[in-house]
Each structure stands twice: as structure tokens, then as C-alpha cells.
Length: 361
Image (cartoon, rainbow, N blue to C red; front, top):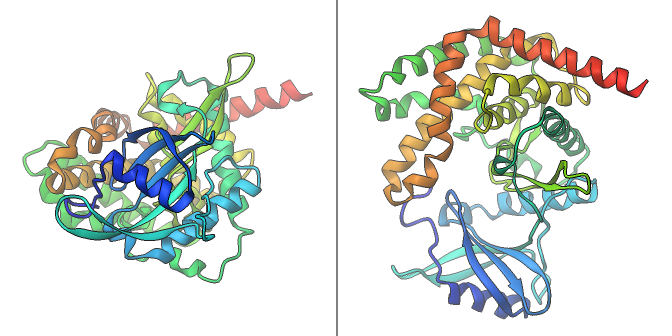
């Protein structure tokens, strides 16, 4: 999490100077993009390209290996047919560099990259059809399968032990629970954490492990309308939470965030699950834990957003985007319970796959 001093705050003229100095490109348009803890600028150049200038916060700047790996992953996935950004090289051939920048409190060094701009709008802005949700599940699984083939000498850096946004780190939320004091949701969160420890942890050894995006959410999946006005996925962005986790973690995270944008959130899981299992079927332990992993992610998002607001009160509106929508969903899923929610998910996934099979015959 970034506090006031770690999140960069460049002016537009500082950003334009960097693009010109390191890439010999002249911005004709430049505007800031919303961001959790880095700073991003949308850049159009006189030379004709569209880019995102990404200035990493000073905490992530101290871990250049992690940033280099994220850049490498995006290139690898792009070459394997997954629509990701790629890093542009500077005039001296670098994909990232350190720049000393004064954002108002003295010169500080930040890692900088210029990434290609992907067309499309966040999936949160379009109506969710079952087919689009199926494609979301399928794309997430295809991405994780592709990453199993990737080789890099420093891949171990993505183990990220104790990474707070990993679904392995749910018990770490207990140290930040004080942000929920006085909130009736505190008891729900405590119950979910208890179920995580008693249901998920004992079955964890049966989960298949892999490298995951870790934040396959409604703002990080971009879509574009095709000629028949149906939306297709046009981009996957923001690999900042990438870590070694489990396939079922990626699926749970994907279901969690796609629920935030649906009028009937419970219906979302079935189509995503069907798309996912068309590539990578879950085993018994993964299926049994999916419900509690989704609720755990909702709790994680709630607790960490509330905690982040204590560090960045001026960024409260952006930090709480997911949480405001997630709170009623957490309450509803918890009240309905595991058995009923799973019934909806697994039955609709089976029906969806039956329909797809008959359509192909």
C-alpha cells in the first residue's frame, strides 16, 4: 500500500519531459489515469502512437526485479495471443529506468516505463452477457496455462511470501481488523476467516499451484465491441499483484470482482466457472473451497481498502470503489450460504456447457 509519500505526483509537464527525453517522442495529448498506488498518464504522441506512462510508487521502485518480471510476463503473454501491454524501449534500449523526480517534497527516485495503450473500455462499463462472462473465465484460465511455459532466471521472486493480496494471506487480515471496529460487518468477516482456517487451509495441499495475475478485476479487463456489437476482451492490464498462487485463487478473484458489476451477482459465477472449466476443470478440493475463497477475497478487499484510506484519505473515493459494491454482496452471499450459492454456480455452469456442446454439434 502506498502512503502520501510513496505515490508519485508528477505534473503533466514533468511527464511530457520524460517521454521526450527518454523516448524522443512528443506528446500531443496527456492526461492522468486513475490508479491505486502508482501514477499513470495516457499519452498520445505527434508521431502517432498511444501509450501509458507508468511511474511506480517508491515502495515498488525498490524492487526492480519484480517490475522487470511483470514486464517480461506481459511480453510473454502478448506473444502467446493474450492481449497485454508491452513496454517500449528507451533510446538506449531499456524497458524501464530510474528517474529522480521532485513531486513537491524533494527529489525522489521512481521506476518509469512507457507501455503500449490497449484499446477498449473497462468491462465494468458494459452489460454482462453470459457469453462475455464465459469468455472472462476462459481467458483467465488460458492466461494461467500459458504462464506455466514461461522461463525466467528470477522467477522465484514472484513467490512473494506474506504478500498481503495473496489468497494465502487471509489470516494476515487479523492484524488490520481494528479498522472494522463498531461495524456490524466485523462478525461476518470473523466468521469467513474462521471458515477459511477450518475449510480452506486443510485442503490447500490439493490445490494445483501456478503463477497468477492475482487481480483479474472489472477495471483490469478491457473490452471492445465487434462488428456485430458484441463485446470481446481487448486487453488485460495491471500485473502488479502477480504471484505464485493456485489456479482456484485466480478463478475466485475473477468471480469476486465480476460480481460487483452485475444486477444479480450470484448469477455471475456459473458462466465464469463454465468458461474456466472449458480450459482447466477444478478438482474436488478446489470446488469445495471456491465459495469461501470468493468470500475471503471480498473480506480482503474490504479490510485492506479501509486500511488504505487511513494512509491515503485524499484517495478515498478510488480506494473504496470495489468495497462499496462488495459489502452488500458479501452480506448476501453469507446469508444465502455455501450450499445454495454453489448450487446456482455449479448447475448453471453445467447447463451452460451443455448448451455450448449442443451448439457445436
